[in-house]
Amino acid sequence: MAAAPSSLVSSHLSRLADLRRAAAPATPTVPQQLRVGFSRRRAQRVVAMAGSGKFFVGGNWKCNGTKDSVSKLVSELNAATLETDVDVVVAPPFIYIDQVKNSLTGRIEVSAQNVWIGKGGAYTGEISAEQLVDIGCQWVILGHSERRHIIGENDEFIGKKAAYALSQNVKVIACIGELLEEREAGKTFEVCFEQMKAFADSISNWADVVIAYEPVWAIGTGKVATPEQAQEVHAAVRDWLTTNISPDVASSTRIIYGGSVNAANCAELARKRISMVFLLVVPP
Image (cartoon, rainbow, N blue to C red; front, side, top):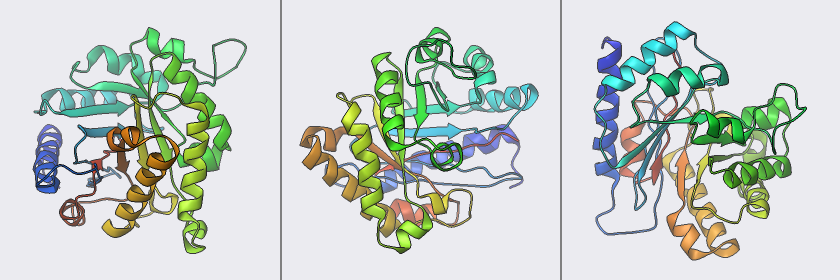
């Protein structure tokens, strides 16, 4: 795209609002999800959501950025026009959280990309929930496929980390999703339900949890779940919440989708009314 950086961010946030309105059901229904993506010089993905829940736009910067590039991205975000009925969250690398928190508009909340399973102590390299709260970090991403399949975190460990984060008033973006071989073997629901159960075994209050369905085979591969595939998993997860937690939690919990969404497929996703949207942005 030829747009200048600040106008690029503003234009995509504006389009996100348009897509949300296009995806909104004519009559109230159980929330659904949608993720919209775009790309510039580097892989940048945007996700958006629509439904009875409040819109959620999240940006996971992963292991990217420098002080200069983070400052530029923060300037773009500060200059963007944001609607009042949208939750916007960004997740910079740990070493830049304080910089982002001190320079980013209070309209946008800040997330960590990981947190330790309990209170701080002799755990070299870890970050505690108490430390996140101390610097004003409101969210944490847990269960991302890169933590599960590259770092080796298991379901139970992730669930316990989520529970401790929530106990310290850190809100959780709980990621679930299947590998390609698991989808091809017809195990998508089985895998997602196992991951959901691990969260449910540890979590008692879902008010501060957002579920992110991100099929592993669609993350950074250029492949994307069809609207029908995403909708099918979202509906199954919501049914699982109804049966295993409660109808109230099932209807109020926001579920978002992520995985190679782009400008070419976002309109179709919106027409399918996939309930919520998750935005991933990697700084240049």
